[in-house]
Image (cartoon, rainbow, N blue to C red; front, side):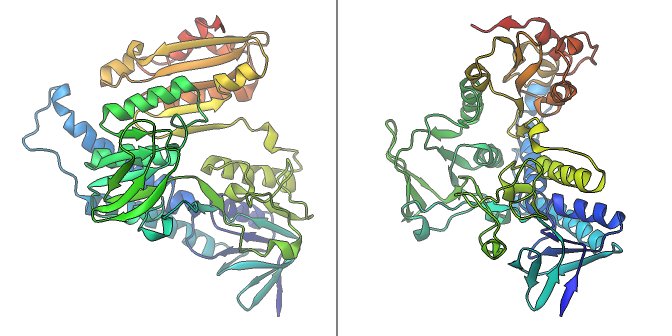
Length: 459
């Protein structure tokens, strides 16, 4: 027997539950389908557990530095990984349970647990149940990429999901991948007490960022004792008596690294392979991401894709914004588009990197006349007072329109202070408006008007 709904939501990640609530509030009869864990990546394997672990690692790091602040410790700092892991697991469990309870108590919402597969463009099968609706919203998320590198299936490896289950301290953690996920785990486990080596194919870390940002982050990590092996031309894995041998083949250093554990942090792939998209005629690109237009509709009328599975953003906040765009257009008569979104994100090493808009490299490639302002964290009072002076601030603006094009804030509080620039960019006003603001002292944000007042033509 077929069950008829006004809308079907596939996936209870960041966008799905919020969209379900809006649709229900608008009087729609909604089914939401979740095949595994409510809350998606952010709650279960992303932001919430990892930032909880980052907080524990920071506490250990600060405790070791206690003497720098005139605080005496009576015993060496040690880390109980079982308690660290249990704390992160509880944060996740509480959030997941709360979300699941909220959805199941929502009048007008039918929660179905199981694997969703398209039977046609408006029909979904979940086990023996057949559901149909004029609007279907895919919020299937993504998972860790496991590349088919030589030897990968001959050794035990960790991903960003399974590493969260570790309640022991790796003697030597080798991380394959020197980008955002890999670097957060590198610093985290180094602070817990592991020896850590990062292996990266490219010539530098986080190649998406400007070279000065990349080099500064590399220096931060090296100062904490993390080994960096870039330009790893031929990465392969093999069993070893001590764990795993990673073949690096770099121009400098030993050709292999032996670790007790290896973490693969080489990107993510969308969960679109088992949804039966071909039966609905839904187009995907070569990487498996669902193709959507500027309003997040697929090539099939009435079917939308939100979050990680559409390739238009790989963050919790972009997924939530996908929900806002779809809800505003369908329920509020708005005309919101993905192209209106200004990209912003953070790298949660310590100190963090806050990013918005273009990099300097991208801005120069655009052909615009540019203004650039910089300031080292050694000249920021808040950083000096906290004893955390690594990093710098950089802001890029269009010389003619005086609009901010992008910024990189690498330093204490950079992930929060970046929002002042995000707001100005979204308001679409010249940076001179912010230049005369009177921010609070002592903060990182108070230096933003100073940097703006010292902008110079790009050389």
